[in-house]
Image 1 (cartoon, helix red, strand yellow):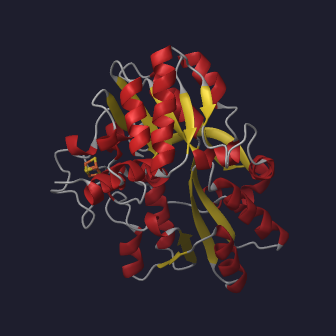
Image 2 (cartoon, rainbow, N blue to C red):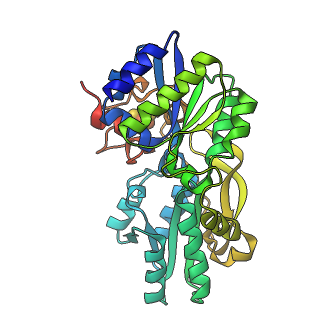
Image 3 (cartoon, rainbow, N blue to C red):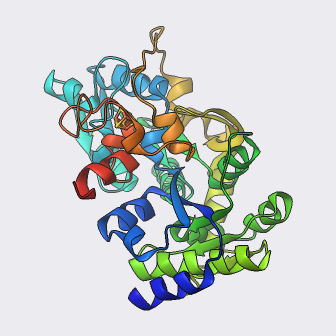
Length: 349
Ligand code: SF4
């Protein structure tokens, strides 16, 4: 790490702003205090790669409504439970008697559906391209088993359209990207090559260990200093250009690309997955009816700006005061991939 830091010091001649897309990388940067290894010319800003953070309030309110239904068992990964909806979170609904269960795989939710034929099981399917294949598989498995009581509440988002949206914003100051290795493990990196070309920006695929991230920064800085704008794979131990074809086949079978709302950012065209029409019987939003939901978002929270790299968590007036992990006002303070939670946990006072 020290050697890579020294290398970056030698490479840099002017200021550069680099965004790491993935919240997992943000946590590594804060945990290992990587900014300390970097020259002052390098500014790291944090991207929208926290699926829980970009899930719209309306979607969480729908999950809350389903979880309150006595006929429903709502299954979810653990970090969704404390994400605030308009007036409460899933943990509160569970405390009020709602059947909310934490699972480690959507296939566990399929198992619950099999074991509880009189109940309707809804899996809250949130995530990027990394988690989507397993969710697709769960629907195919439910169909294979002939289950009529398994449903997905889907909020899947895709990385490349979000990168394009960020770069297209007149406020954007991003000059280089670190792309998330795990997403590219599934999808490959061929989708990033046209983005590099269109926006004349280096995109470096990196992993999550501190040396991975420093190596990614060094590669991006090398390109920036030499005026190059390529997509470069520095996570070749896991990523190929084409990615995991089997996982992509599952995605193609179960999902269609759709416009998707990103919390705090707005609607990004063709930036998400929804269940394909032939699997509509598993789509919770088509099967269940929902009360009219009036969403309410905390005004003080600047999560939208944090997720676009326009502000950092410490710029938020509520950070560590009104907003903390015990009483989060926004999803980035809750999620294990949220930037605000990374600063709260690891920031040296
Ligand atoms: S510190 Fe809390 S209120 Fe501020 S941006 Fe982060 S989540 Fe929102």
